[in-house]
Each structure stands twice: as C-alpha cells, then as structure tokens.
Image (cartoon, rainbow, N blue to C red):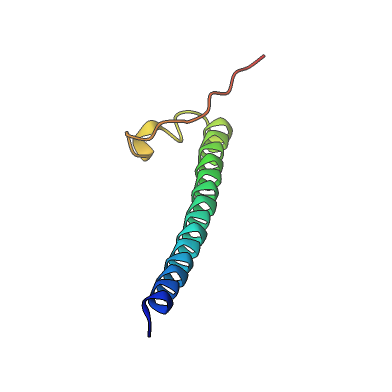
Length: 76
C-alpha cells in the first residue's frame, strides 16, 4: 500500500467520522427540542392543576425549589 492509498483511506475515515458527528449532533438537537417541549408541557400541566385545585392544593412545597418558569404568561 502506497502513501497515496493510505492518505485516501485516512481521508475516507475522517469523512465517515465527520458525518457520524454531524448525525449525532442533529440527534442531540432533536432530543433537546423534545425535552424542552416536555418541560413546557409539565409547567403548563402544573399551572392547570394549581388553577383547577386552588393554590393551596398544589403548592411550591410539592416540587423542587430550584425550578423556575421559562415563560411568562400575562393577562390582557
């Protein structure tokens, strides 16, 4: 095997690894978006429960104190 063939195999291997990396990054982005949607839905469900059951039935003592909302909802 000559140096040209070895270089060609190395380039092919690097191309393959780069494509795998790009695919993994795309999958990671999809999973992050899915997680964000689920978290938003969880906050919405919690707010619905508080509204339906009253603020005393679902209080801040029932979930982690380090949780913080990512969206502000205002009345018009």
